[in-house]
Amino acid sequence: MTTPIDKPAIRRRLLAVLQGGVGAAADQARTEQTGAEIDPGTAYNIDDLGQSDQDGEFRAEMQGVAAGAREAINRLKKIDVTPADTVRPGAVVSFGGDNYFIGVAASEFTADGRTFTGVATDAPIYETIAGLRRGDRFTFRDTEYLIDDVV
Image 1 (cartoon, rainbow, N blue to C red):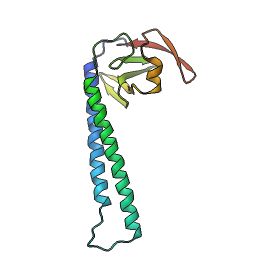
Image 2 (cartoon, rainbow, N blue to C red):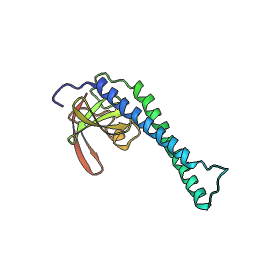
Image 3 (cartoon, rainbow, N blue to C red):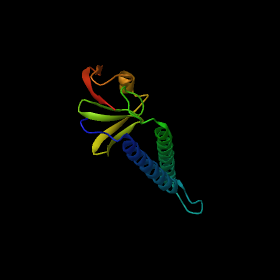
Image 4 (cartoon, rainbow, N blue to C red):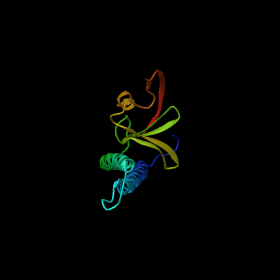
């Protein structure tokens, strides 16, 4: 990274992304709850019961997604985003042409004018790069990489 990086801004953006995921999952869970309910005062058939079961299962999955995102938000709020010279939670790491925010898993998101991917501390790639510095090389899944930057 050639220009300075604003890690607090990256964390704020990632928090917003994760909070949006909680809201979307919770909304979907509520929608599925409505679909899972069968009015006992109306006639229904076996297909209605099957659909109700499926909607109830999907609702539980969406509640799990929302709970996971809330957990990630809580972890992210506690991460130290002060400058780093080694790969650790709160560091931003660049290698292979991509940028990674270390601490929580997240799909690609844009912040501070760049694209990042969130890497959880229990991810295999993190286990490989933890503690490395700018200029270090590592191999992951049979490909060698050079750490271009750690901030």
